[in-house]
Amino acid sequence: MVEHRPWNDIIAYAILTLGVFIVAFPVYVAVIASTHDAATVVGGRMPLSPGGHALENYYRAVFVGGSRTAPEPVGQLLLNSFISAIGIAVGKICISILSAYAVVYFRFPFRKTAFWIIFVTLMLPVEVRIYPTYKVVADLRMLDTYAGLILPLIASATGTLLFRQFFMTVPDELLEASRIDGAGPFRFFWDTLLPLSVTTISALFVIQFIYGWNQYLWPLLITTQDSMQTIVTGIKKMLVTTDELAEWQLAMATAVLAMLPPVAVVIFMQRLFVRGLVETEK
Amino acid sequence: MEKSAVFNRSKLLPYALLAPQLIITFVFFYWPASQAVLQSFKREDAFGLVSEFVGLENYQALFAQPEYYKAMLVTLVFSTLVAGLSLSIALLFASQADKNLKAAQAYKTFMIWPYAVAPAVAGVLWFFIFHPSLGTLARPLRGLGLDWNPLLNGNHAMTLVVMSAVWKQIAYNFLFFLAGLQSIPKSVIEAGAIDGAGPMRRFWTIIFPLLSPTTFFLLVVNIVYVFFDTFGIIDAVTGGGPAGATTTMVYKVYADGRLGGDLGGSAAQSVVLMVIVVALTAVQFKYVERKVQY
Image (cartoon, rainbow over all chains, first blue to last red; front, top):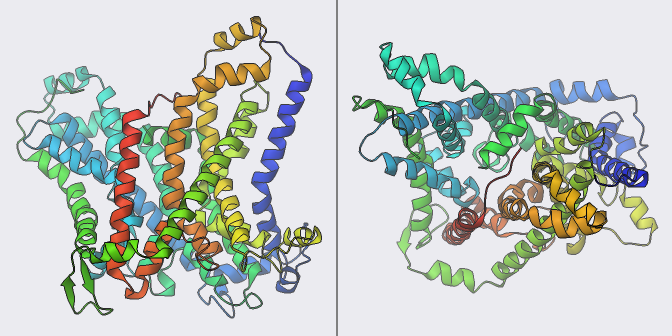
């Protein structure tokens, strides 16, 4: 038995509480700033307790927009973020579950080649090929479209690898049994494999939703109209001005709104989130 | 590992199942990546009307640029600081949370949520707190006699970017360190305790060595994170400035090619980065034992 010293526990609690405080502090300040009026925030003497302008700030941010710098209301940007994040997550799941099914459950010429073609994409994130990818999307006339926001980001190997790994753990007897029952590839996929994959699909969805929601460089490049921006790129535009003019209270309200959906996903779907995070790294 | 029971009679179906992913991969991945390689050997005018083959000229120009070496140095300093700090802080927190505390689960929830905050948003939050004229913590810093101004002082800007990046990455490292710690058998630690080793000694001679696969895995992941995911932080906080003090290699690819500037040079930088990432990934696959149990 390891010795038990009370002071040891106290130190542990103290360190962790300090950690939680540091982790929460920047977000706390942002929430506070979003409840004060512009003068209080810009004055540099903002109190660390809530002010009385929360409703007004959030209403203006979501429905009206800033008066000077970012005229586009955040409501539209939130919608864009939701559409592209869900599009990326669902798109990735659909194409990768199908390709993993082909690679695991079929034998055909160039099977290994196909797998490697997909596998290599793990290595090169969009950041290293931004301008050529931009050009492809521009040539396909997908600038300022949801397809342009979504499609280039679903070309990745993580999903395929994850499903492949899961399918390998499914017992062969299941396939044999359903073949005896006369099921073909479609029935087996739909009636047996898909129901078994629900947890894997959900875990991947959670991770990819966060990934899609938090994209920055790509939406920044391919959106030229303000109304097609995502919320994460929109915040930066609110601050591109001289400091005195930036409406920080609205920018902070927007930042809080931009954090809320993915943070809620992590907190309320923690089990799936952790599972997805650990599995996609394997 | 291969399945023994498979569908043998379907000849075309597997290709149809693979088609969506392969098409998207070719259109948005292989085609642009090969264009980047091609473009790095070409020179193009700002409107993309004339382009000529110039061989290795773009690379020569790139490696003759003092700014490129500066970007390399910035990337090196930035990744060392972020990986070092976020790994050690996360290990400290994880080892405390591993001590069978009653509230460990609650602490875990409170620690991991910053993972969900977008890098660009994390940057904006920290920029707001440390903004030279209106930041909540800028005034106390100035009170201490420090002329704090990340907009003008390169070191201050770097400090701010590092803080934001570390803050965001602690969550991820914490989660994997905690999983690694919990997978260490209690019997080994008890054996150490019976032999008279105190908590510190046990940590450094038993726990830390057993944790090394996790640490190495996290090191590679953190370097990849610093290279690519911190783009949003840098763009939101400093825009690469002041005077290139926070322009990393990835940020320079973006900045040099922006508005059709130096596309050839930008593409050459992309190719250099691709080589670095491929090398990192190879190291990861060769040496990292991915046996992190959760």
